[in-house]
Image (cartoon, rainbow over all chains, first blue to last red; front, side, top):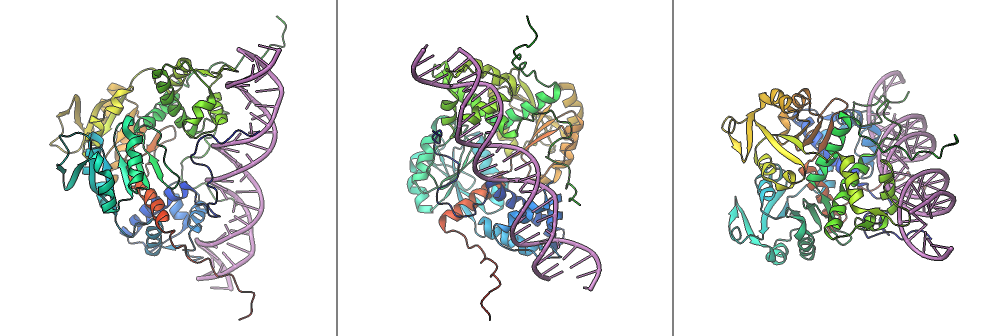
Length: 241
Length: 241
DNA sequence: TAGATTGTTAATCGATTAACAATC
DNA sequence: TAGATTGTTAATCGATTAACAATC
C-alpha cells in the first residue's frame, strides 16, 4: 500500500487548473520585471529572451517558457518591447495597484521593516502594525499606528488587508497566523522560525534567516576542508579473515 | 549547435564530487535540526523518519534520502536517536563551532540585524560592521564596532571572517561583494535586490524582500479574481471565413 | 520471533533545456 | 528577402516518491 500523503501541504492541488504555474516561474517574473525597469532607465526599448537570460545566468528558453504561461508578449525576429512587457508583468503579478500590508511584531526586525524604504517604494504600503508589548501599543512608528494584537480581526477586516508580515518569535506565530487567516489574510511573509499550518488557498513565504546562515555555514565548511563523511559502511569483506 | 551556456552561474560544476548534495537537501537538514531540538526539549529520545516528515508535510523517504547523503544514522525498526542525529546534523552543517559574521550596511535593515537575537543565538556572531556614512563610522552598535567600508580587506583578513551579510542598496552591492570575496569571504547573505556575480566557490544566498512580496501579491490577486489571461491565440480556424 | 523502520534502488514526476517550425 | 527570434514541442535532467530487502 502506498504510504499515505503525510500532512497537508504543498503537492499538487486536486482540481487545480490544467497548467499550474510553477512557483519558481513567479519568482523569476518579478526578477525579469526588475531587469526591465533597469533597461527602461537605460533607454532601451526592446530586448530578446537571450539578453534577458544572460543577466541572470538563465536559459533563454526558460524566459520564453515562463512568459508563455501567461500569453504571447514577444515579436518574432525582434524580441520584446520593454515597456509593453513591463506593463504585462506588472499586470500579471498584480502590481497595477498598491497593496496594503499589515505587520505583526514591532521588535527589532519589525521596526526595521517599518523603516525599510524597499517596501514602501514599490506598491507595498505597510499601513498598520500590531504588537504585544503594552508600552508600544497605541503609539506610532513613523506614520504607522500600532495596535494590540487582539485587534487584528476588526482592523484588517475594515481595511480589507490581504497581506501580512509576521515578525514575532516562533512561539506565538501559529496563533497569530490563525487570527490573520480568520481576518481574511491570504498571504503571509513569515520571519518566525516555525512551520505555519494554514488552510489551502493561503500562501506562506518563509524567510528563516537562521536557516539561510546555516546553509552558508555548510558551504563554507566544505570549502575549507571537505567535511568528514562517515566512512561508507565497510562492505562485507570478500577477503577472508 | 546547442546554445552556449548563458553566463557563469549555477549548473553542474565540472569535476564536482560524484554525488552532489542538492541545495534543498541542505536547507532541509537545518529544518530537521530545528525539529530535533524541539523533540529534545520535549524529552523524546527517538524519532522515525515518518514522524519527522509529518511535521513539515514532507515524505519520509525524502528524510531518509537527505540523511543518506551523509551516512547511516538510523536504527532499523526503531528510527533515529534524537541526540545522536542532532549531533551529526550539527557536525555536517558545520555548527560545532561559532562563526564570525561581518555585516556591511548599518542602515535600517542592518541595524535590525545587529540587534536581532536570532543570529547571535545559535553560533552566528555578528562581530564587525562596515558602513559608508561618516557619522556612523568609528562608533559601535551594541558591542559591534563600525568601520568604514574601505577597511573590509584588512579587518576581515585579520579576523579570518568567511561569512558576510550585505544590507546595502543595490547600486553599490557588486563592488562591495568583490571586496568581500577578495578579503576571503566565501558565503554572502545578500539583501541587496541585485544579482551578484561571484567566483565559483563563493556561495550567495539572496533574500529579496520585494520579490517575496511580489510573489505573495501574485497569489493574492489570483485568489481574489483569477486574473485575465490573454485569450489563447485564436486557432487558425478550420471553418472557412 | 513478529513488527517496525531503515537504507537504497527503481519508478515517477516536474522543471529545465534543446531544437525547430512559424513568422516578424 | 535573409536574418533573427519567438512560441512550443520533445528530450533531458534532477528531484521526489514508492517499494522492498535488510535488519534492528
